[in-house]
Length: 208
Image (cartoon, rainbow, N blue to C red):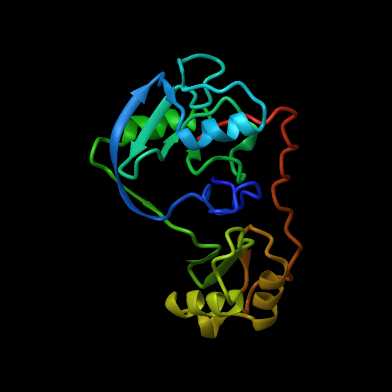
């Protein structure tokens, strides 16, 4: 997803954050040409990189083999030539998917399909009498009170009375980013192991 903060751009330091809202699919392209937005061209120039106005399909094209354009101009869901960055905040606002995954999504959606992008670091799920809670870091700094957010989500799911407050507090405090069982009948909580973050790329790939 989009980078949370651009320290080089005082006018709008949050300009690369992935936008939220309801959009529609307005374009589908295989082997797309990357038409580089002016803002990214300016960033390339400032960093002393070669400035491209557009890049043809090929192994250096950061969009990969598939582009799904959204009704908010310049934003879309696409493949990538840097699959280790998927799941991280590395783009200029677009959503990257790994090869193989983007192929399936590209085939499944149609022009006019609705795409809803939601920013929600707190997730609650139930499985029978089990209650699972996931709390992720508030990377975009949009939740003023994470504890209140957790309680609101538990209440909305109708499970606030079934959870162990100590377990909930531990998940909230650690923000592991994986689902943890928090109902009163859950077995002893074992510290979960979150998927390891991939190492930073030696050469960052410019990409929208």
